[in-house]
Amino acid sequence: MMVGVNCERVIALLVLVVVAHLPNADAAPNKFHYARDTFAFANVTVFKYYRGIAFLRSPAEKDRTLYTRRCFVMTRAALQFYKFARFDPNGQPLDDRELARRIRAVMRLAPWRAPLPDTERVIFPGYANLHQMSRTRTKVLQRNIGLGWPTYMRIGNFRMFFQHDRGYQEKTHANLNAALDRGDLFIGYLSTFPSLAINHSVLVYARKPGGPGNDIEHYLAYDPNHPDGARELIWSAKDRAFAYQKDSDFIGGFVRVYQIYGKLLQ
Image (cartoon, rainbow, N blue to C red; front, top):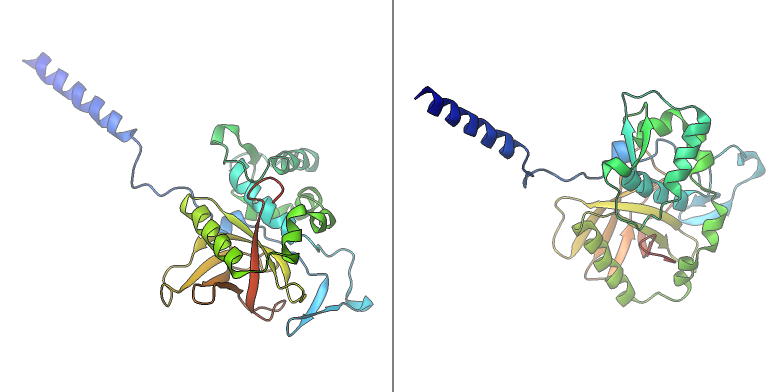
């Protein structure tokens, strides 16, 4: 009789162990968090803007130490860290040389690749997340995530010269939703060409909850020019067009959006 009771207890214990290790269907997937997965430092625009018009800065306003022309670099790098890096806050921080080597290892991975499992990610000890590390080790990151000038020569940029129709923007909107639906991120190139009101890159990471109706969709975006918080990209089904939030660099309103870093040569 005692043997039977012990067997029942063992079986019950085994069932509890198995259930505890089963995948939790209700568990939230790892999602992009602004305060964790973005850079603490800002990209600075080369031009000075007034009411949406770009002007060259005066010599007195120029500072060679400013971190400029890196919006493409920073949105791409944020995506790469999100997909390919892992942080260990309990580890010993790396020296500058080894930290630079690991940053470059992440940057060599194509941003359109699927995320790596934790066991294959590049480890960054001593920091809880990218935001913390970029606040503490700013210069090492700025020197190693990439140069700004090559982004002007990207093949995908030339779409702004000929892809102006609203049908193309509808396809871009569909691709944006598809990316978010599968748990991916979307890097958008914002342009108003031939106007120079905006020539910029943002990382769209989520839909904004709520909204005035089905015709208007609001998206949250990481803008490297504004590390203080998320910005808004808006889609109007009625106008078949995107709009971007007004700020100190942009008058706000209509923009064309072109997906970048979603595939090779994009």
